[in-house]
Image 1 (spheres, one colour):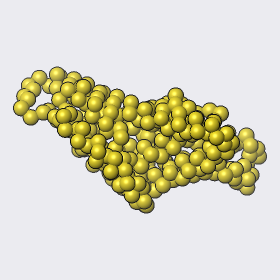
Image 2 (cartoon, rainbow, N blue to C red; image 1 turned 90 degrees about the vertical axis):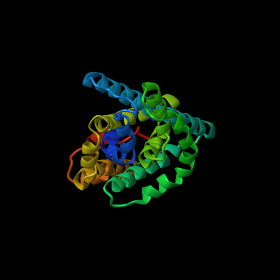
Image 3 (cartoon, rainbow, N blue to C red; image 1 turned 60 degrees about the vertical axis):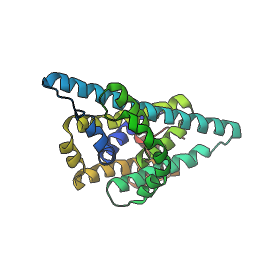
Length: 260
C-alpha cells in the first residue's frame, strides 16, 4: 500500500451508523437509563454520569474495533510478506469494495444478503453474550467500558467490510488506524442516540435517511471497483475529460483504503 485514505473510512462509518442505530441503539439508549433503585434529584449530576458512561462505552467499543483491525492488518500483511504474493492486495481491494456495494444496498433495504452474514456470526456472539450478565445494570463507567469492549465483537456486516479494508493496510498499526477512523465515524450518531434516545433512533430508520446513507456507501464501493478495474481513465476519456490521468487523482482521494 502506498498510502492510507482514512477520510472515506470515517465517512463510511458516519453513513453506516444508521445501521448501528437499529442494531445497537437499544443498548446505547440503556446507558442513559438510571439503574433501578437509584433516585437522582439533581439534573446536572445525572447528565454528567450519562456522559461518562457514554464516553466509556464508546471507548471500549472503538478500542475493540482497533484491536480487530490490528489483528487483521498484521496477519494479512504478514501472510502476504511470507508468501511473497505481489497481487493479493488487488483481489482483496476488489472484495472490500464489493462489500461496500453490498453494504450500501443493505442500508437502503434494496438487498438483504448481508443479514445472512450477520446471522452466521451469531454463533460466536452467543458464546460472548453470557459475559454481559455481570455488567448489568450498567451503572458505572467501568461496566460501560467493558460492555463496549464486548459489544465491538457483535456480528456486524458493516464492521466486517471495514475489517477487509484494515487487512489491506498491510500492518497492525495501520489496520488499527483504519478501524479507529471507522469507529470515530460512528461516534456522532451513537452519542446522539445515547443522549436523545428513541427520537434519534426513529429518525435514522426513516427510508429517506437510510437511502441517502446507503447511496453514499454505495458510491464509495463503486468508485473503488472502478479504480481497481483500471476502467477509470478510459471512462473519464469517454466523458471528454482532457487529462484522464490527472483527473483520476480525485478518485484516489475518495476511495476507501490505500491504493493497491
